Length: 91
Image 1 (cartoon, rainbow, N blue to C red):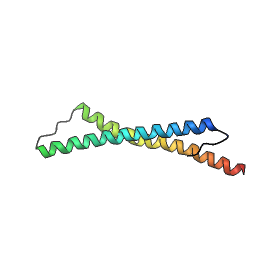
Image 2 (tube, rainbow, N blue to C red):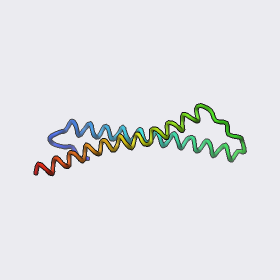
Image 3 (cartoon, rainbow, N blue to C red):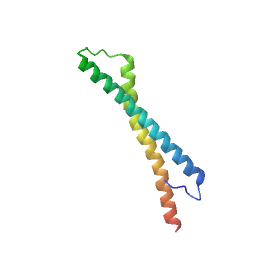
Image 4 (tube, helix red, strand yellow):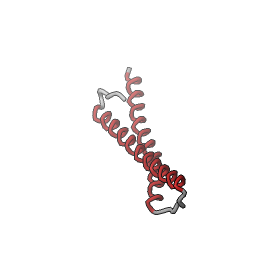
């Protein structure tokens, strides 16, 4: 995403929003990955799995944060597309 000469602040805000979206998506993927790793370790050890509120929280965080991060990134990309449209119509 390039910095738009006419709207430098909005360009910077779009980059910040995109970065926040990446971070939120990464947190979601890590939460699901941590729960998956914990679940597979329990199965290999032969132990029975008992669900705790922490397990539900990890799964909920992963299921909510991953798509939320992708939506936030899409919003930032929409701003970039609007910049491209504005640049092409100005020419």
